[in-house]
Length: 63
Image (cartoon, rainbow, N blue to C red; front, side, top):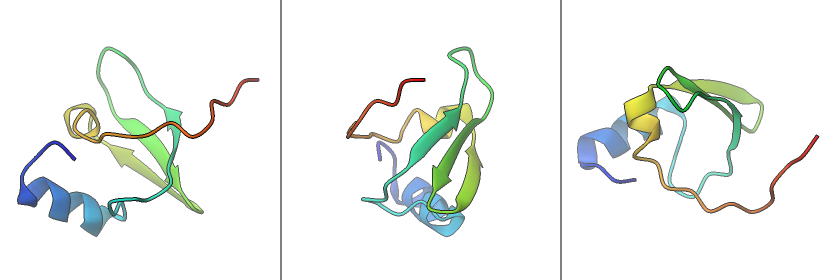
């Protein structure tokens, strides 16, 4: 997470701890919320906040 302790605590309180496996469900390159799934939970994260979450891609899903 590219942010201070406040951002980290806020994301953890929302259910996004460091090391969590997440799946991006929706998002736009021009702004708006990003919806991710963490286990059975769906979580909407603001565009700016989501841009500070660094991820490692395990597998790309194609349809």
